[in-house]
Amino acid sequence: MASPVSEAAGIADLETVRELAAQLRVDSIRSSTSAGSGHPTSSMSAADLLAVLVARHLRYDWDNPKDPANDHLIFSKGHASPLLYSVYKAVGVVTDEELMTGYRRFGQRLQGHPTPVLPWVDVATGSLGQGLPYGVGVAIAGKYLDKSPYRVWVLCGDSEMAEGSMWEALDKAHVYGLSNLIAIVDVNRLGQRGATELGWDLDTYARRAAAFGAHTIEIDGHDVDAIDAALTEADGFDGPVVILAKTIKGDGFSEIADHEGWHGKPLPADMAERAIAELGGERNLRVRGPVPGPSLPRPAAPVNGTVTLPTWEVGTKVATRKAYGEALAALAARGDVVVLDAEVSNSTHAEDFKKVAPERFFEMYIAEQQLVAAAVGLGVRGYVPFASTFAAFLSRAYDFVRMSAISHANIRLSGSHAGVEIGPDGPSQMALEDLASLRAVHGSTVLYPSDGPSTAKLVAAMADLPGISYLRTTRGAYPVLYGPDEQFAPGGSKVLRRSDSDVVTLIGAGVTLHESLAAADLLAADGISARVIDLYSVKPIDTATLAEAARATAGRLVVTEDHWPQGGVGGAVAEALSDGTVPLKLRHLAVTDLPGSGTPEELLDFAGISAKHIAAAARSLLA
Image (cartoon, rainbow, N blue to C red; front, side, top):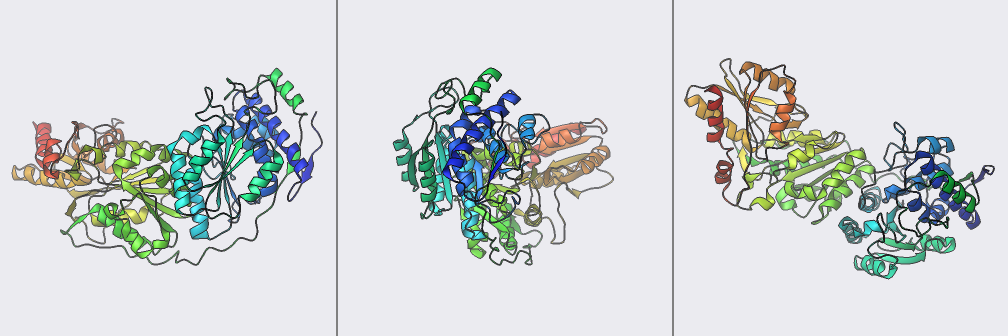
């Protein structure tokens, strides 16, 4: 039988904390059993840790989750969502009814893994190895930009300590001296299918974390006094703190505690009844810990400073990667823009921003997962992050990009050195799948400019875009096509050649736009008039302009891209015109064979995407 509701405000005493821990275990069992799915045992192992943290150390105004002075709590082990939602019940922001009827149900906000649908959740978790990297980004914002004393607490699972991204995070936490970042590792020994790599070997975990520059504390994760002392000790170090807590999976119910085979399994109703009885029955404690102090204003910044984008003369040659860097430097006038790079800023030209706003430039070195995660974390704090590296290497961070969409994150990515056009570096450096992968991200925007002015205008537009946006840039320098007054917006396109006598449409983006223009000249020499479209916005795509061109040229379209055939520009065009309302005779030119080293000209010709191949494809449509 449930006990009457009792409340504790401020810092709860340790006896109350012990009762709260029992309540969190009971509610984790109840909610998952009610839903018929979930991870109660993973929640039970960390219940004491969360009870102490929430009741005595987490400075948080639960009625004002947007208070900039609040601490941040990130559940890296997102599968332990029953525990998190039980915490929300204990602090009074989720009712028992919602916990029991809304967990893991269709259309409800208490999803299987936490997402920012809940106002107390900063980032979506559940793909292991991500919470701590996100925490690094939030902590960087706190130390270097907000200059606020909030702490970032991250609950980690022991299984995810096998993920390289966790060690990237600890490394960068040390580099940036993040004394406001505390990782609590729930070392419960058991993973999904059996024992974890290190089991309860806390000493090895500690040596590894210390080698990455963290201060480590080893405790019994069910000793409330020891937990409290460790969380108190975690304040005051020059760098990150890792608390290694030895726990028992399923702790509190003797029938399953430390037993294999119970990961991700709710207790059947009869077992749940016995477990709740062994834990002393249901409770309805309402416990809120300390609240944050007054919010500190951010340092003065020219948030509404004048942005003057760079310009170039038509016909001069500029690489779009260089235009990206110059546009970023112009955006430095906005005090909310931050830039991150993965140790290639002299190639992506993100270094141009660093020269004018070094305090808002963060080097993530060769750690692409942490690059994207830090961008997300900075976005949590309201900043406008741009993150750049070679386009090929963003694939290493793709799961972070995918999860960023679930987090409703607003981040801007730039990938340089795309396609065979990069030349002698060879295929390891040639992004040939990036358009497909970024188009597949929910709600993403994918942009592929062809000259300096279009790049600059699109970079400026990205700063105000919601969701995940991606800019593909080119290594080589190509002629400027547009004057300074030309406007570019996501979802648009430009028709560079048009006449009433057009019989075929050539569609390109980036380097293949320039090749398409050259192909149009070859065709014109034979008396063939070709329309040429700059499809700088691959997603969203300008369906209306494509359809108009298809109608005007009897459906004859040649789409050319420096990308594998699957999922890129050609796929976007075909999907846009797939409703059957316009005629369609499409030739799709893309990279089909594995390239090697060579000059850009040799490789474009090898791939069949140079001007002569485009012209030949157009002629084949007219045959």
